[in-house]
Image (cartoon, rainbow, N blue to C red; front, side, top):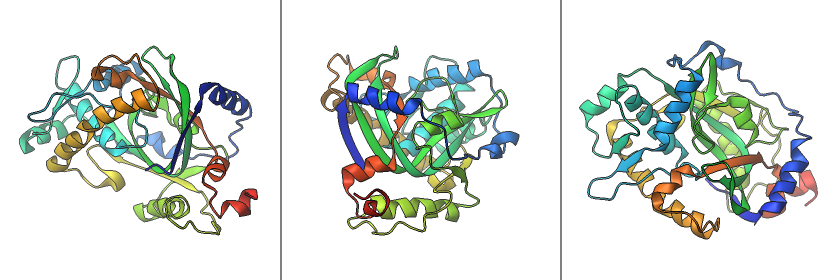
Length: 319
């Protein structure tokens, strides 16, 4: 859910990154110790296996009946994140039982086929975070080089990504960043400013309260004048198994087929975004879009206040 989105010349983005990288003291404490004992009972894998899984899932082909096959737009950060997480879960299940370069994911998955996939070792789980998610996004090509002269700042309240259990550590498998998994705190630092800590929600009600708070500030026609008392912490996460939707509801086969159809239509839209918004002209065909990666640099609540001029910002920043 986007609350703002603007582009700036890449030199400004570089200056912003340089200016913040050296002073990021991570004032807040993030609580990831919940993952120490593998609470989701995920299948342990090595870093090599996790990276191979990422490379395999990246090349997933979405096969919607009667239509041309489509790739997955992994780098459209805050659109369809729960859908992409479900697709990684499907790909991981196929990876454990099939040989091949990439998975073909059809929207005609039967109950029997789905049950077979659910019986495979649980390699991926789901990590969901609610809070002040703010980031400057820069697009990279498959070689890691900047692919555009622009950076985009985006803000939203909820994000969902896959997790894997790699050599004794839970890590984020975010294919917008690359094939290899990322330590949770490293990933988190790209989308939340240092002053906000993040703890585990004890239940979905507590988790939902965080989302409701930020939504009331950022995503209503008349944002609240007074944002206090602010929740402490102002960010919370929750984790649950694969083949689950947002807030942990089990996904039946009909929902999963719908996920594939939903993500299918994103590919041509994102292709147009790369051309028109990001001004990337040397794209190649639509099959190139899974290989456009992202570099994230956290933004701040002040960024939002400068752009949106919410009334509550006067209390904090005098704007």
